[in-house]
Length: 182
Image (cartoon, rainbow, N blue to C red; front, side, top):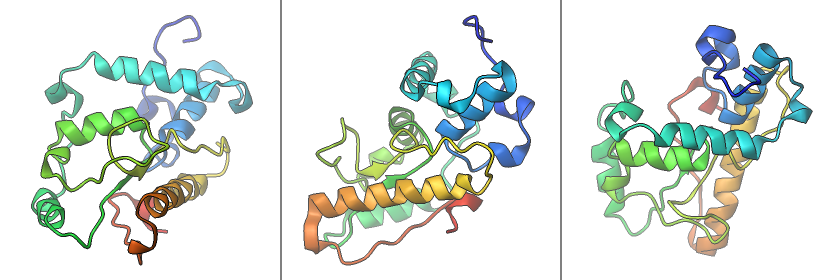
């Protein structure tokens, strides 16, 4: 902790409401404060996100997603959506983008073919809004768990509109976390 050693896991260091359904950025900042006494304004999130990606890269896909499974029938529904010309699917998640890409591949979601190609301002992967795109740094307000996610949803929508223009007439958001219910 602070000396290159790992800090405690969120479930060991933070109350559940401060990490469950939150974003990677807010969780990292809350851990920095709780474990290291570091204020959010002093944390370089880009460096933290890179360290998180490097850590995750050390695992094989099977180990990386141990305990993570798509909800029932999600893969089948995504395969159906992949075949439709009138639907564009993206991903909105509190995860760092490169970690999210890995999760989608390792869980089989990417293989459904449903996720649209990335927008011009993304480095690869698929269309979406991610925890690495926005972080309010407001670790004291628990409502930021869903408000930061709402920002990420807006980013995904703007990317989709910039890519597909007026061909997109509406946005439908399907979530799997309490913070997804806006």
